[in-house]
Length: 223
Length: 223
Image (cartoon, rainbow over all chains, first blue to last red; front, side, top):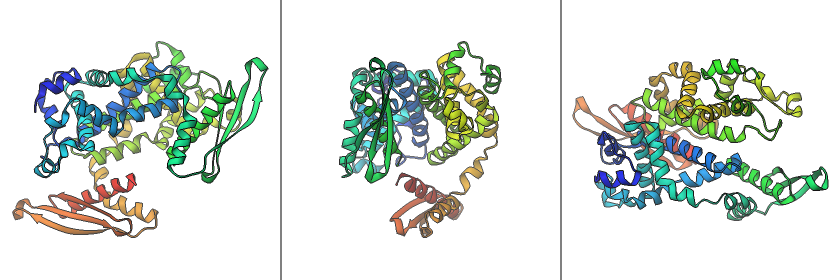
């Protein structure tokens, strides 16, 4: 285990390197493995990304923040970050996993990275753990474009339904209130095959459709 | 809104009461509602409960910690806590929700309580938010019995399968290693109808069965 390389990537120096060692130990390698640390690190990661997104994207709604967070904490993203810091070179694996290339397995790498966050928490507390996450995710967060992230719920919904080989949603105006210069539109989004009907409102028909689509995505994701 | 009653329940005094007011504002009441705060508070709650469980239950495994946490952060539990502090009396609801008794709706109360945690975070930072959660959950956490929480995975699995009207699992010994005084058992749990086979190990046959059952539950929950 080359501690320094990892410490550099997360900009944190361990007081007790045993925590880091445990974070890098897969259960195939020994009894003191990283599964509990992964539980801890996963929770801290979720929370830290939530606070970072909350503070950065002041105008995004809850559903949009949730989806952004999901994209940042999913295995694929963690795997990419773990590869960027060559975490696989430092894993402690059992013989079977070593032979079958476990150090390249996305799930093992993603879990180990979460465990590293848990290890920082145990070693230094919440603030250093959050700082390590902010540091590692910094470039990825900086690259997020709030306008882009929130604008294409209709497209996202269409792609989800196409992926499931289901009929496309239909949008319909339910009501429009107010004077011409300050109208409020209410639009519904129907997915008949799934019995889903959601309603969105907004200052334009398009904005209302986007909200209805976002709600439909949330409903679909909960199914 | 009676601020003092809520502040007493969570043992926190707001510097800026506007945060609390927003946390108690349902979207039916106005534009400055609590949905984003709920997103934030939910994340902080999950993380805080995770760290509290991690520290209290040193011998529980990741899957058991996850299940315990799920039981503590689910809507039903939050609803009960919100009722205990009479949060419904302080909610700001739109007219429609008021008439239909929205101040008693479990989802509205649970969301508002999460938003209160988010408000404490914005007002005071992470440490006060965690302290407020620890204070509110204190009696519930103290009442948890680690032995009890972890002992009945076989029962839980059986109940899950019965709930789905599926055949019960079968357990079988795969191997036993070691001397008589320090044997290690390996047991499999088969749910034929679902094509699930999991393996558990432990110092007794019973402990190994419990672990196999816990893994089967995790597999089922992921399906």
